[in-house]
Image 1 (cartoon, rainbow, N blue to C red):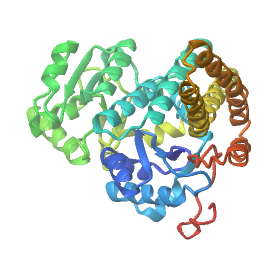
Image 2: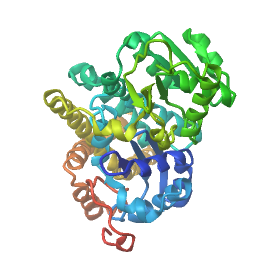
Image 3: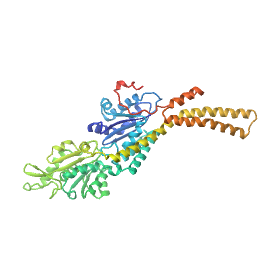
Image 4: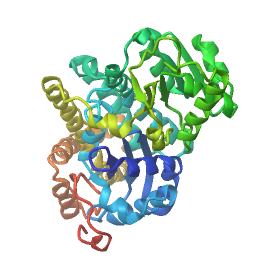
Length: 466
């Protein structure tokens, strides 16, 4: 049985998502060791969601809630978020609803920016990480591979892929009303990962040419060389000075601490002030002509600095907003300004997702009766082998007799095989199982079958769904 535990921008605060992101790497392994019946776990952790996809190997009719609460305890242990808060926050989807949910997520339908393209790659990398750690399962493999296929189909057959914007581009659109001339904007890019590359491409599309890169992990020189920009030395003084010179600071690192804070900005301004004559007016901290609209501070004009924080956990301490002239756009602010869905494209995309989910579930339902089908075939083939042996004992060793017996066996099995698929698709596995037991005395226990989305009850109510 498939299960999804989801915390996202719709049901969780930014602070909770930030905490969940810190311990996401260790969560999958902890969930598998926390409950014996969990055979697979894949964690999808992005800047706006934390989701755990679980494969539960339990007999039909057994409640999934004990495994769910064990998984929640494991997430709590790895992230530091209390189990009580997680139970109040997480949405629970299980059974047939899991495929439709993941397909919608991978297609960008559940993103802050509907249709954004990064999520498909993030989902794919989550599966790769689970493979590397040995936490995935065959059913989760099938689920995630089908999700990638569905997202490509949605992108190719609807307008949602073309309409979707990334968080990077949305943040720069929000910044555009503060920027006078992108061509004269000096940018400090903090980070050298995938988001850094996307950020640099988006900045260049706007006409930005003056970009420096700083890396808390020391990768700035290599990134700068491969992207034809300048690298900022790793020492604190160099970072402070460059942060004061920049019109726009854009952060997107995986660092688990604040890379930019008010202290760095004020130190940088002090360093710059010491380099200039005390009598010279400060028209702009970043050059002769301010690229960003200035704001008055006392008797001088301080260039308004924009700080865009795309990191999770936060790369920027919120106290930078206390520094004169500094405006902070973080993920929480960007989320508030996310555009409305494009209804036509979204509606068509959801139809495609729904059809793909039904097809996935139909295959899963057919496979759900596989143990019963195997038991029936084994029972019939044992009878067949016994009859062939009996014929041989009577001296009948002709190929015609054996061929006729095997043909008769195939004819007799044809209708039960067809009915097994029909009953499975209709969700009537119990009818097939009852028939096997009544007619042949074959008793088969199946894994848990398709349930729908459900609310997560309180821990004390774990037996309610039994």
